[in-house]
Image (cartoon, rainbow, N blue to C red; front, side):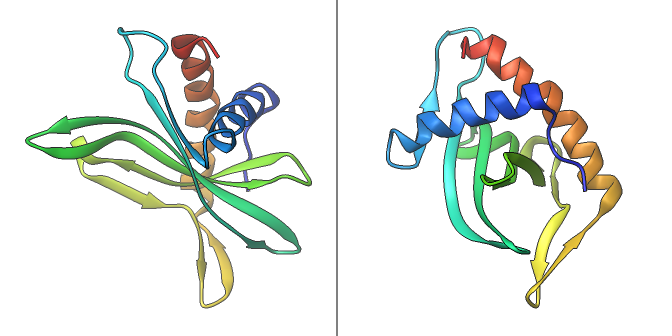
Length: 135
């Protein structure tokens, strides 16, 4: 299972701190050039022996009156380990929804290649968000 690198985890922690300061959700728009980033605490749960929190981080647009994710990534965050695992990827514009880390019948399952690809993407994406939103 692949987790975000230290730099991306630092950005993730800043994003969720902003959400926690705003009742669990926040929309960050620090410029007019790049899409805002939305951060939302989804729920708290067990992840193996650890307590975990699930979050959604996304860029959204509106097309024909519909909210469109471009992309939305959900994450499982284990505060005790300071580890962040991507768990799903959505991009409405190209019709993609993939769960890579999910609970089924009380057991956690992983699609190893997809989850690794998501983590690699998110390492870059977090740095882009940091630069674009001046976080």
